[in-house]
Length: 309
Image (cartoon, rainbow, N blue to C red; front, side, top):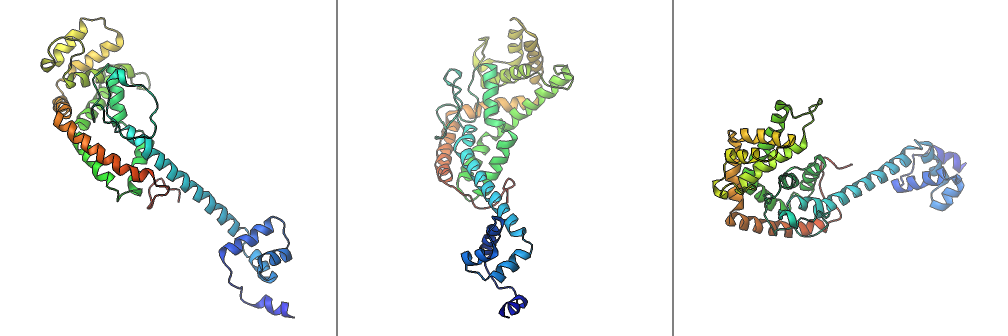
C-alpha cells in the first residue's frame, strides 16, 4: 500500500550528481534494487529518475567532461604559446652566422642583437627574419588575441603595446613594401598560372630593399651612408643575373618612387639608433618579467573566441 502512495507523490529532490550516478549504474547493467541499496535512494525515486529522459543526464555529463577537457587543452596551448612562440616573434635579430636555426624553447626574450629590426645579412636571411618578427600565422594571430583576452589585466600588455608603438613606423612601411612587391610581381609576369608568386624573386627584392634601407651596401659599391637604390641596381646588373635576380632588379628599380621607401629608410635608421635600442631593451625586460606570471598559470579567467565553452 505504501508503494502505491509513493508513486503519486512529487519526485523527491536529489542532486544532479546523484541522478548522474543512478543513470551511470543503470547503463552499466545494475538493477534498480541494487542501485537503491548502493546510493541510499528509494527504489521508486530511482525508477522515476530513470523514466524521465534517461539519456539526457548521461549525455550532458559526457558533454561536460569533453568540454572541460577541451578547455584544459586550450589553456595548455595558451601557456605554451606564452612561453615559446609569442617570445619568438619578439626575439632580437642576430647576425646571420650566429643564428643556429634551433627550435626555440622556453626562456627569456633574447635581447642580444637588434630588437624590432632584421639584422643585415643575405637577402633570404633578412626576409626570413622580417617574417619571423612581423608575419604572424593565422593561428598565432588568434592565439595572441586569445592570450590578451584571458590576461587583459596583466601589465604585460602595457609593455607589448609600448613595443608595438616603437616599431610601428618600420612595420607599417615594410608591410606596405612587402604587399607592393607581391602585386608588382603579378603585374610583371613573375607569377604562375594560378597567380602564385615566385618567392625567390620576392625574397631577393624585399631583402635587398631592407638591406639598402639598413644603410649597408652588400656589394661594396660606396660608403653605406651614400648608398642609393639606382646605384645599387646598376651594381647588380654588372654581375651575373639569374632570372630570379632579374625580377628582383626590376622591382628594386621601381621602389625608389614609392612613398613607403623614404618612410622605411627613416624608420630603419631610427630603430638602429642606440637610444631607440636602449628603450626597446628596457621595454623587453619589463615585458619578459610580466610574462613570467602568465607562464606559471594553469587556468586563465575570462573568455575568448577560441574558447571551447
